Amino acid sequence: MIFAIAARELRSLFLSPLAWAVLGVLQAILAWIFLVSLEQFLLIQPRLIGLDGAPGVTDIVVTPLFSLIGILLLLVMPLMTMRLISEERRNKTLTLLLSAPVTTPHIVLGKFLAILCFILLMLVLLLMMSLSLAGGTHLDYGQIAGTALGLLLMISAFAAIGLYISCLTDHPTVAAVVTFGVLFMLWIVSWAAQTKENSADLLRWLSMMQHQESFQRGVLNSSDALYYIIVIVVFLLLSMRRLDAERLQA
Image 1 (tube, one colour):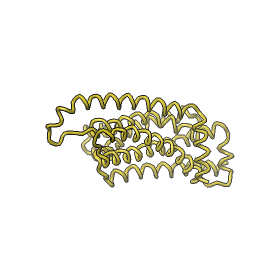
Image 2: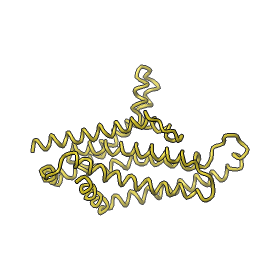
Image 3: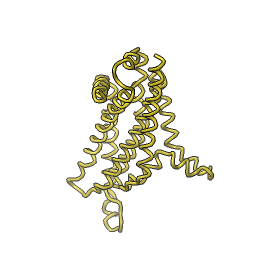
Image 4: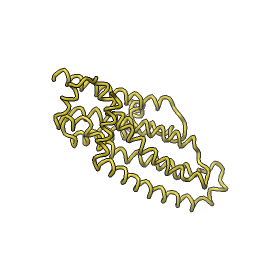
């Protein structure tokens, strides 16, 4: 049943122009940044040859590209998740869905799986762009894999938060704005650690940006991965609880 709901949601997603517009615009922006970064690398490459431990094409071209898409998706994911539940409620189809012989976890996980498939498609396109360099230079595949994994976990956390907020309202635009506000606060919360010494460690731990640093070095830090898993699980459980409460009221 989870896969049936995910397939239905994916079909609905790609029947709308939003998904195609997001994919097209993101690829155009990333391709332009990729080519500019590659040109800059080729200009400074002669000066890097004689340096010990000089950064390679992975550090200068590929890793910044993954960092950039993380920032772009901070803006895009609220648009992709805003309609998951709120539009069902606005179209009066949520009551029918909740009264169907399907459990709340199936609904939530199906919706989340659909967005996860969309995320994986974006990552595959980005990886194809990065791996196109393999024919002409040496890439650090471990670093690329770590960066991609970190980005996947972070965007999945974005999606889980957006899904929960979509459960709280019947206005997709409101869900998008609130989701962006929450994600932005979780992105920059570590900035406050510079002025608040007592709670600095907690603020750094809450920051999504802070947990990307080890992944971008190609290091799999279990505590960073656990942070994203906790965020995903907590917000999916909150979504289930919210829909369960609505099912009881209905």
